[in-house]
Length: 239
Image 1 (cartoon, rainbow, N blue to C red):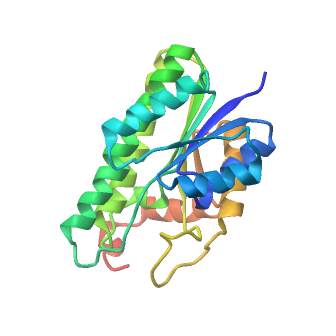
Image 2: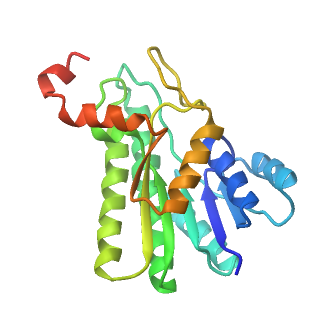
């Protein structure tokens, strides 16, 4: 039986490249994002079997309704990937930026993950993939809300993983923690190990296939994660 997947945030970057890989692997793919023009371009590239639907993660209630409707339109799905999010450099700690990040990366992310996990519990199986960040591991002075929001995403995914394990259902919850990936959000000085979105998507696809609980993208970022977890606060503050 053909597997079905929804990728939220498929208009560009890793989400777009992952949708291509899933389609090439035989999945029936539904793609969601704000920018319908880019989704329609993707459908032109991949074929008319690709389903498209608009979603604005910044508005949690309408986004939940949109995802619920899309799941029903597709007759249920086996995989949901939440790759939508935002992040801005906010050295002046402007509240508008902080508020936007929290609304999208926290409330919007949790709302969509909630819809996904309810669907999989009702279905009795499934795979939820959420894209957090290596930034989830520690606070960050350049954009405090971004690091904190990604920590929330990782923690929320872990909670859902515990919940489904207690229910003894074959539901996988995967936390994707990318380092620097060449996207519209990869701005700033001192960036290193920047992966093209195609490479990042290939490694995410492999992590999905292996049903990993946590995957660092690209793999070398596991070294940075190890360092961030052990470095003392007094040293981290000076970095």
